Length: 447
Ligand SMILES: Cc1cc2nc3c(=O)[nH]c(=O)nc-3n(C[C@H](O)[C@H](O)[C@H](O)COP(=O)(O)OP(=O)(O)OC[C@H]3O[C@@H](n4cnc5c(N)ncnc54)[C@H](O)[C@@H]3O)c2cc1C
Ligand SMILES: NC(=O)c1ccc[n+]([C@@H]2O[C@H](COP(=O)([O-])OP(=O)(O)OC[C@H]3O[C@@H](n4cnc5c(N)ncnc54)[C@H](O)[C@@H]3O)[C@@H](O)[C@H]2O)c1
View 1 (tube, rainbow, N blue to C red):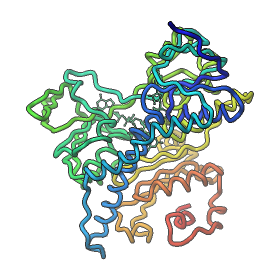
View 2: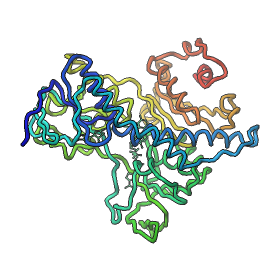
View 3: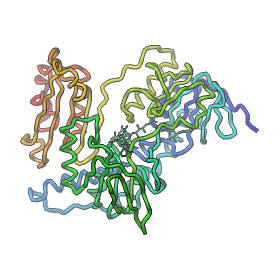
View 4: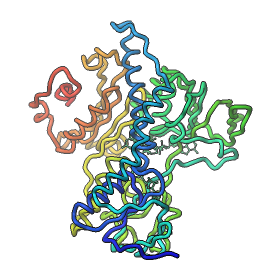
């Protein structure tokens, strides 16, 4: 029989980066809080997202640097041992769930394992327990989206890729976003013959066209084949592999197929209607306070339909913001500049105003593309085509947006994020001293 287990000030659903950060912050301000997780504690990012991806990518990055220096002073041939790399990755991920749960418990957050579902506006059911609270935080994240086509059961996802025992000889990725470009780089570097199939001709559409075109070319030089403007309409199992078919008599045989066509919020089996919470296919509908249509129920991280990129850094900011709301603050959320990186070959990064946004007001914003090929930072590494794009506000003369394409793009975008966020002028940047020669010391010449 179900029973009211306890009453809480707040119940947080989902123990990913958003939920764990929210629960810890709510507890730290003296409130009684419960956290519910149905699968791996820690959520997507450390178990099947950013962190395992970055562990695999670290080997890819080392190989790429060595490849560029081969014949330029470096002799050793470096190659990826996928099975050892996977053991290395699992050594990290295998302890995450229990360590995260233990960490929450030692912070005196009450933990529950199981699927959470609202049964009323102030009650959530998990297993045999009914939890009552004054406030709820939905932090249930997203799951990989699949294509609704015959043979969809043969499609694998980023979760499967990040735990592959063996890299197949030939693999195909459907999609053209972050996941497709990151997995393509890792698989190609690990020796697979990779094909990326996209239903349109504009991959990574939030990033500048020029930089994306260069990235596509770079991946092609790494052996990745791109098929644009191609719908895949069926997957069939043929022997140990698969046959993809599509419009215009398209047909391709491959060892494995991965869908990387976006992610879907985990909001459909949460009993949201019973709680008066509205949602769309973007997630829980929230206002500028991250409040849902039921004022005492908030949504944060990937599960919220907030107008920002779905990233771990964003989940953390939203978690701390909601905890502060529960402690009585009532200001609207004010997001800082959000840098983002596609860890491909090379890396593509962006922050602030985008080229697409700047083009809507060309009288005010100037787009500057700077080729860094001859600069010592990149020349010493023999990088093929490092680029930086700056968006300059002609009125204030400040840089308001930036994008970078290079193996240094992840570090560069963080520096640019601070300079843009703090609204530094070119004059101020030129006065700064950075250790030379480093990625940062190029900033005074870029500005
Ligand atoms: C392959 C991949 C690579 C990525 N790389 C990066 C990167 O490099 N940098 C970056 O910033 N972001 C990256 N991301 C995105 C990042 O992982 C997410 O933005 C982040 O995990 C969102 O955190 P979250 O807590 O909102 O959701 P999640 O991490 O998805 O956590 C939600 C949790 O809620 C649980 N849950 C769901 N429903 C229920 C329920 N009803 N009851 C109980 N529990 C429930 C889930 O099991 C899950 O553990 C990547 C994502 C993927 C898939
Ligand atoms: N480095 C990072 O920060 C990182 C890495 C991976 C994932 N993520 C997060 O996860 C999210 C999901 O990544 P994603 O790559 O799955 O999604 P995405 O939204 O970035 O890209 C989806 C791609 O699939 C294409 N697509 C959609 N429907 C299709 C169809 N029917 N056939 C073929 N292509 C189709 C889209 O045109 C788009 O190119 C990202 O938006 C990001 O928030 C972040």
